[in-house]
Image (cartoon, rainbow, N blue to C red; front, side, top):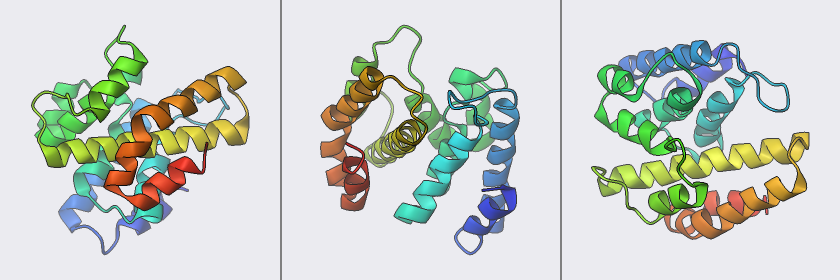
Length: 189
């Protein structure tokens, strides 16, 4: 998928101003991940773009804040272009809260991090944003699992641990949020 294909997904689903902001996030993400590669050798930027595209094409999620957060979700962790405060200034508090919720603190245990999100113990976040955050985390996991299975770059142990975290922390919540989302996640086990 290229930029033009991505822009076509937005047409008729968002206002002109929202499309401009989404495409700004697209450019920031592309620039922020400019010299990064995924373990399979693909450009890293393909991942956040695909997470946003999956939301729209497979799940009919056309939520402006969620799409922007999908594009920016790895920027604070993997790039020095922006910090969360910059994201808040440019894209607003809700996008900031979604992106910061997707960002694991350095040294934080992965299981504790996932437990915090999926048990709803995120400070300063309302119920609607929490559902968006959980949805975004599940979309991220779906893309990462698909990519890992397709490219076979992870060890069997790492892949099984990643799947186990998805089963343990995400599947029940996915069923509450969207049965189609849960089904797509479960297909990867």
